Image (cartoon, rainbow, N blue to C red; front, side):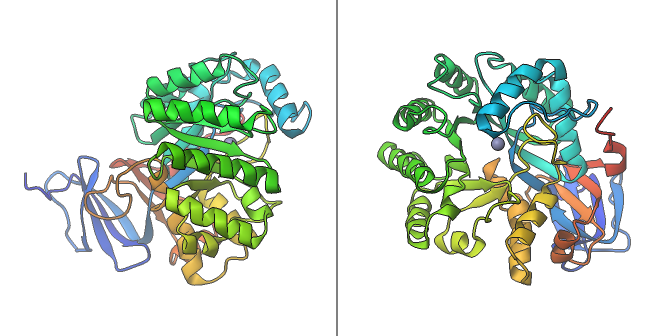
Length: 405
Ligand SMILES: [Zn+2]
């Protein structure tokens, strides 16, 4: 077998809307992307006819909660009280009855994401005194159940607080030692009421184990910006490597004035601190040009879907990218394409160090859409007609499941 002999050929597709090409795959990786040919077949290769459709790299969900959803159960009323504390309490009261966490829940959510083209996911997984590390085990089992089609990176997430629940820091350390890629955190002022204590605890784990940190920061305006400062101080003081620390949501970055934001972004860029957003509909969006000009990377996430926090969400990352673009007033071609890049090629840096694109050497993660170009795919949220993940071909129709069953 020659080095570029293919076992799968995704024939006649337009990578990123460009010229008609054949994507040749072997051992789960792209071996070449060549002009389409009338007779591309290698002996024994499976040939998929793309019929000139648009091909994009697999979508990347950089902020999910695949351990907690009632996808697969009958409709679950919202219940409980609003606000972060109210939702935490309601989740603790109802999750056992819904089988949260379990391999079944996580598998359903990952499979639904795969159906819409998501091949790589960074997921937060609850770690608390009730479930311990059981959720992480369930998510690992779910990823294995899908045979690695979806690459999963895990954040051990202290949803119920860190310092206010003695024992949780130890659990996070155990999770990091057992291979969690990141430890999470949560509103160090508003939840633990001890921002220095929480962040010192998390950064000690990162410094000792080499794991990253991915912290939920919902804190608004200057209070949230103060948390940004504390995070950045610790990244700098401990010499944490670029790309290891992420701030999720980080609503404060759009609340503060332009000068404060410019200074925070400059410091984030120099330290390699990133952000993830779920494009919240009732808030200002992360300013695309300011982030790109500063050199601060960010990715899109679905957050939890159909869970005890919100009945909304369907797990379609392209839908989140659309929401971001629409709510942010993004209309120019180069900006629309940039959003699609963030949703796929560039978002992958939140899950893997590998190159993630339609190029030789990359994992064969390819999504086909019957769209004119990437801009059209985004603005119409075009359904995915075929998903290739790690070189395996999935028919989205075959992955479809009724969410209430
Ligand atoms: Zn979240």
